[in-house]
Image 1 (tube, rainbow, N blue to C red):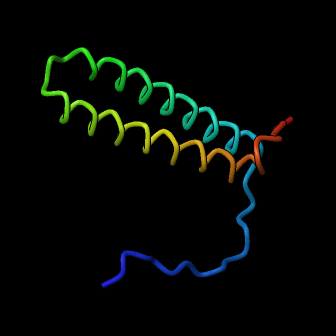
Image 2: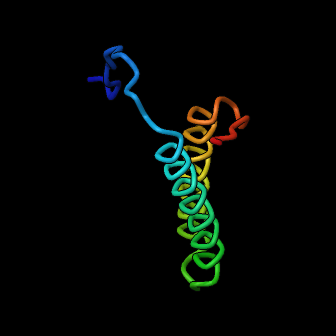
Image 3: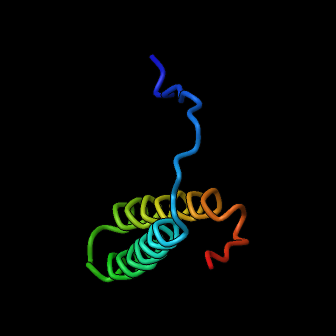
Length: 81
């Protein structure tokens, strides 16, 4: 069984720069929140192994969000206006 979802190539939708900037802004906010949650998780007093796993999963989520940002902004070079 595979967890890979095939994507169909579709024509790019006509997306305004404002909509793209809003998505980028939301993703940046999510990444910052995930960083903060990771820091707070470390202070919960849970078993060390559980804390390490949780923080690692949050860092993996941050990495995924950053990769999404790179894809949307063409590698970080993004000026919407």
